[in-house]
Length: 640
Image 1 (spheres, helix red, strand yellow):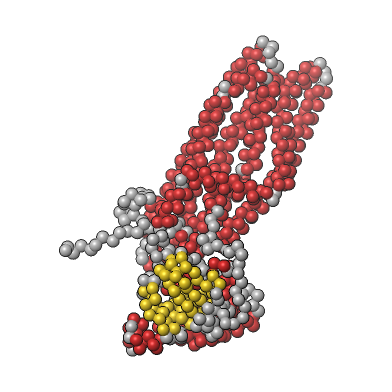
Image 2 (cartoon, rainbow, N blue to C red):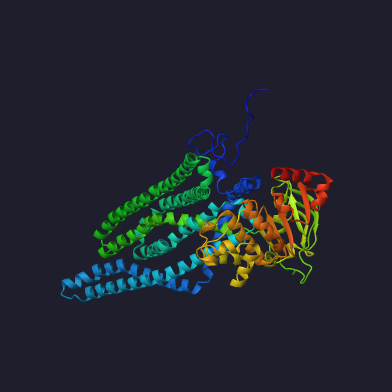
C-alpha cells in the first residue's frame, strides 16, 4: 500500500475544491444544488421535479388559484376599482377625439367670428381632464388599500403555514430559503402592487380602447395600421415566453444569494473558527454573479422588446401619416380625423412600450407567487387527524408503547426496525448508545415530529396519529441541547408553553428547577430581557430556563435529549438535584452521554443500530457486566 490517504468523497453540500470561480462542482454538478435545501436523494428528486415543465404548469395553476382566493374577500372593492379605471380610461380616450372636434368643427366657425364651438370643445376637454384626475386619485387610494390587505393576508398565510409544517419539512429546507420566501418574494409582489399593477391594467385598457376607436374613426387608415399587428404579435409572444423563464431563473438566483448570506451569518462562529471567510466570500461572489447574469439576461430581453415596439410604432405612424395626408388632399378624410388618428396611434404603441418596463415587475411577481403557491401547497407529513381521539383523563397517565415500529429519514435507510418498547406511567427511562443508534429518533417519534413508516406508537393507549396536535403538544414536551429562547423577558420564556400562567406559577417553576437564584440576581429579575436567542444568558442559564419552561407546562411525558450536555459541572449538579422533583409522577425519556444523568433513571435502555441490546435498572445492568457496565466503568474512571 502507498502512504496516500484514501480519497474521501466530497459531500454534495460542499463547494468546489478546485478553487475556481465557476458555478459547478469539479464533477460537473451544479454548485447551487447544495444551498437552500438539505441534499438527500429525496430532496434532489423533488427539486428536479419542481423544475420540470409539468411542475411549472402546476405551479402556475396553483398561483392563479391562490390569487383568486386572496382577492375573493375584496370583490366589491375590486368592482369599484374597475369602475374607476373605466371612468379614467374613458376620460383619457376622449382627448384626441375632442382635438378632432376642435380642428374640424371649431376652426371654421372661429374664422366666421363664432368662438362658441371651440370654447365648448375646450370646456369639455377641461371636464374630461378633471374626471380623469378624480378617477385616478380615487383608484390609487382604493388600489393601495386592496393591495396592502392582500399582502398582509399573504404574509400571514405563508408565516402561519411555515409554523404548521412538520419538523421534517424544516429539516429538509434551510431557514435561508424560507427567509427568501417571506422577504424577497413578497417584496416582488409588493413592488408590483405598489407601483405597477395600475399602469399594467391601464395599458391593457388603453390598447383595447384605442384599437376599437381606430376602427371606428377611419377604416382604411385602421387597415393600414393592421399591417403592423403580425410583427407586434410575433415580438410580444417571443418576449412573453423568453422572459417568463428568465425571471423564474432570476428569482431562484436571488433566493440562493439570500440563503448563503443568512446561513453564513447564522454560522459566523463556525465560519471564523475554521477560517472559512475567504471560501464563503468566494461562494457568495459566485451566487451573486449567477444572480447578475440572470438579471442581465432578463434586461437584454427588455432591451430588444422595448425599442422594437417603438420602431414598429414609428414606422406605422410614418405610413399612416403619408397615406392619410394623401387622402386629406383627395378629400377622403378630414385633417382633424388624421390628427386624432395619429394621437390615438401614439396611445396604442406607448402603453405597449410601457408594458415592457413593468413586465420586469410582473414576471418577478408571477415567479414569486408561483414559489409561494408551491410553499402553501406543501402538506405536513405529520397530518392532523380528521377525527381526533382524546387522551383518557385521570391517573395513571404517561404510558408510552412502541409496537413493531419501523422508521428511516431516507428511503431504504432504516434507523429503527421492528422496535417494541413499553414505558409504564411515571417511569424514567434513560436511552444510551453510540451516535446514530436511534436515541434521538425515538425521542422525535414520541414527540411526533415524524410518523413511523410501520407500526404504532401509543400514549396512554391512544395512537399518536389519532391525537389532536394541540393535545399532543400539551402531553409531550421535548427539551434539547440546543435551547432556543425568544426575545423578551425571562418570565415570558418560562411561560412559553403555558401563556396563561401567572407570575406565581412562573416563580414556582423556577424554584423547583433551581433557577430562581440566578434569575433573581439578573438586573431586572424575571423581567430581564434575554435578548435575541437568549444571548444575555450563559448556555447553562438558558438550559435552566428551558427546564423551568418544561416543568411549568406539566406534560405527561418529558423528553430530555442531551439536555444537560451543555451545562458545566456545578450547574449540572444543581439540575440533577432538581430533576428528582421535576420527573416525579411523570414519564420521562432521558437521552444522555453523561452517565451522571442516567443515575436518576429507573431503567436504562442501551440501543445499537436501532435495536435495544440491553434493558433493565442501572444496578442490574452494571452487575450483568455488559455494554452499560463498560460505559459506567469508563465514566467512573474519568472522574478519578
